[in-house]
Image (cartoon, rainbow, N blue to C red; front, side, top):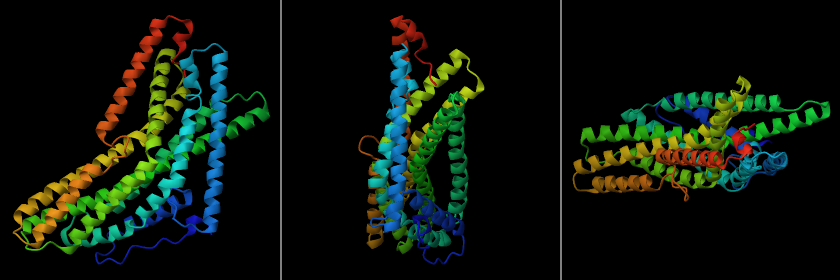
Length: 404
């Protein structure tokens, strides 16, 4: 039985009606897709599932290294033609480094990140259950997860389709079809490369979906904290503590999974950003046709998914955790001495710990400030490189930013 046909345990019965039915259906569809694609793998998969993952990984590996070989040859041929080394580097996609990074990112996902992420998926149905019970008592958007997930599904389909179509058009236009056999081989390689690049975008997309669920749960938690503080209670509702505890554990699991999955794709996103800038410079200076816009457009979407989406997702979750900490601090002050105040203090300390550790991938932290630092550093070094090439005065340097 293929891994996509494995039964997913439904969320526990809830007492709030079907308010989260849309979220439950979207979550089950998401889990099936991620387990079918290898983005989430159980610790001990069945034999048929293990065979499927092995075949999928072998196909992706062969496609990546064929693309790396072709890119290296393309760069060496450009240098033999006397082109500037910068032009040869950009034309060959950094001598195959981009596709090598894609392969490394997929390898880390299949070996490490997918198992960590699967452990997180197993706890999401219970999170929806705790959230719905709390929303039924204190409000906080009981059906928001269903609407947000459905909208994100639509955005994901549009974005991935746009990437694939843009890359395919750009590759087809640039393919030399002098001989039928050569043309067919080139188109097959280009189609495989487009598929791999599109497939690799499932890595950031799965964290976008998870971020939507956790962010909606944080909104429900914060709405309940505000309502409890207004009521001035003696004891805290048990579902309030359970939801906050589960959210804290899931945020820790999410950070652990992102540390394995998102470090290498971030580097790939930086290289894609460099290619976008150089391609735009070439479009402006060479006054290229509309078809030439396809390449920077596809690369720009890759930059959005690889850099902007993870940073924005983490920033929104951090904003929700920060609001929870502030609400818990206010609630702690309003509670009298006793077990309830001790519980509120413990929850506030857990929120402060999540605020400090969430999104810390070791080499960097996923924040909006990190995105700004990456963009500013890339543009600065591109300007320095352009000035260096302009001052060199060599004829080849004039064409150093022509990319294809």
